[in-house]
Length: 111
Length: 113
Image (cartoon, rainbow over all chains, first blue to last red; front, side, top):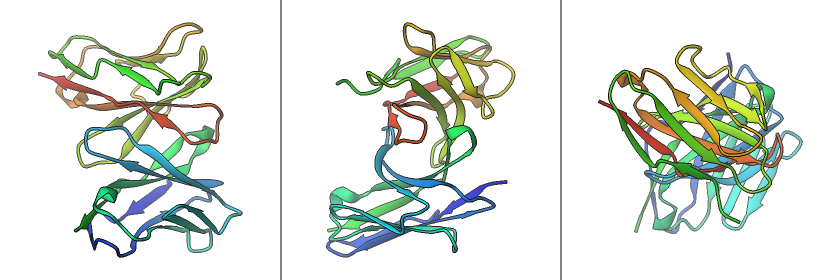
């Protein structure tokens, strides 16, 4: 069955550094992959979508890569700020256009 | 353009009662998704609906759970005869098309006593 793995341990990063989060998947070849941010007690907020024919996508301080050979996506936040602290979720296109979600990685940016 | 609305935000039910969760998608969105989330866990897909149609309900338990998205009015997730294990946050999301980003509501936190 399809499986998505994100680092379950919290990631602690010093303010100003680049934070890199990993999303690995198995038994699947999704047409696209999405990244969301979720703050405590709130619904996820869409950040970026990258399709299988795209290697990299950028939006302001955010960058996503998609390696279909390694079955991996990397999510980077450059010049990180304490306000970037949140849980980041990756989601893959599943069958019938529904999304399959990773458990999320908690990112903590220390001032 | 208002975002996705969910109500109630918090719902407390006793075992055996019914829970009705409502979701109004963003204006112009005809695709609605329901998810369940337990603390410190990811989102679990439950059901995907388009206006008046259930497209995929593979993540929804066959018993006690049902969902609808009528031609007029909000989408409803209904849980009959709730049990303690139903306690969770239930999120609704909407999108304008099938393979686009999803816009989430604030969620309904269901507590079963």
